[in-house]
Length: 87
Image 1 (cartoon, one colour):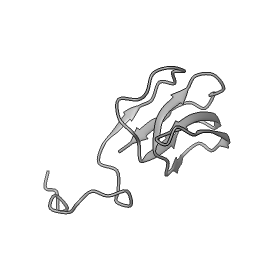
Image 2 (image 1 turned 30 degrees about the vertical axis):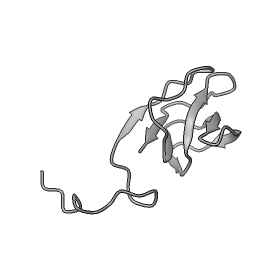
Image 3 (image 1 turned 90 degrees about the vertical axis):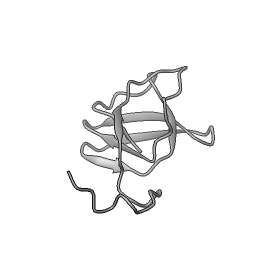
Image 4 (image 1 turned 90 degrees about the horizontal axis):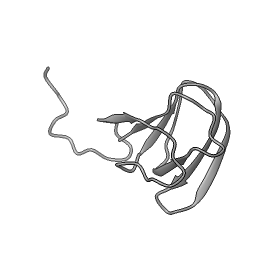
């Protein structure tokens, strides 16, 4: 498939170029830091940002993409499903 944008630099404001299903874990960081989080089913997401700050997204909405640099999604407190880390 042709990629008309292959010579353009990837940035935090450009569309995602890769993604991976996130399995929440209280102790293990993701294999990569995200630049976006897709939520497949509404619920709560407890995440640790790249800065180390822990945040809670209450009622994260299904079908939404949150522009967050996440290094871990915690299992404890997270009940949203279908989480995909975008990079």
